Image 1 (cartoon, helix red, strand yellow):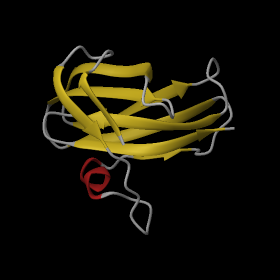
Image 2: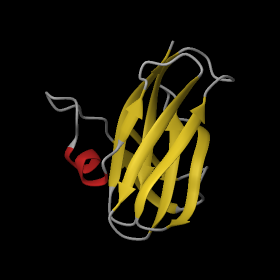
Image 3: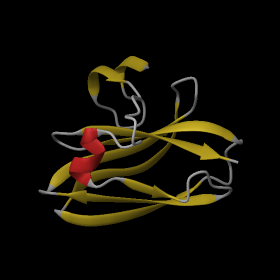
Length: 116
């Protein structure tokens, strides 16, 4: 679980609580709503993040380390409805477990990503 009074990466102020809960099939319900997929995972240098926005939304995609620190902002701003794709170039990061958070106007979803 990660929490804080503000988001250093996106600049929004408020109480943020990010909890990673993995369902038995490995897909959380919010992830299903936006069709969040990450492949390959685990990865060595880069991975692809795909998601679908049902409506135009403000979006933030942020990578957190195991300590809950935001280490890499990936996307921020208004995006149209439809499918979107982002490439995560993690070459400057150490190997380990990370948490990818994708936040839109009405959803918040997280996925564990593993850099080998």
